Length: 92
Image (cartoon, rainbow, N blue to C red; front, side, top):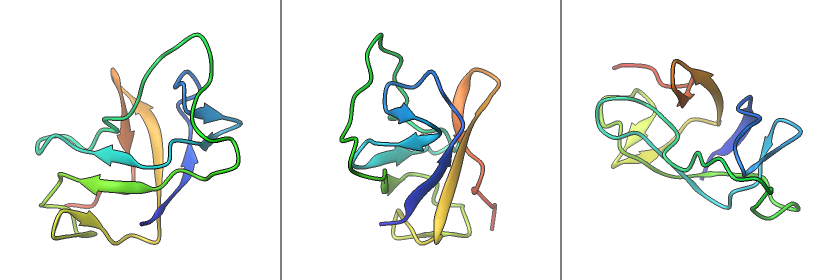
């Protein structure tokens, strides 16, 4: 599972110091490469000793997607418009 190399969405409950600490995130809803694990909460969550990874990717049209699994070496997540999006998404 590829690492979430950088997460710039500081308001996410799983983000601490630009690092994702969710054990596994899900990317995409088949139309947009958003981090579906993005969650705002007053306290931080996840495993502080772990680096987040991509558990599933629903973006079948992404160059890095094989069998709905991400094969990129790592991804970057950032706030775009109203959501946390995977900036590593590359259309085939």
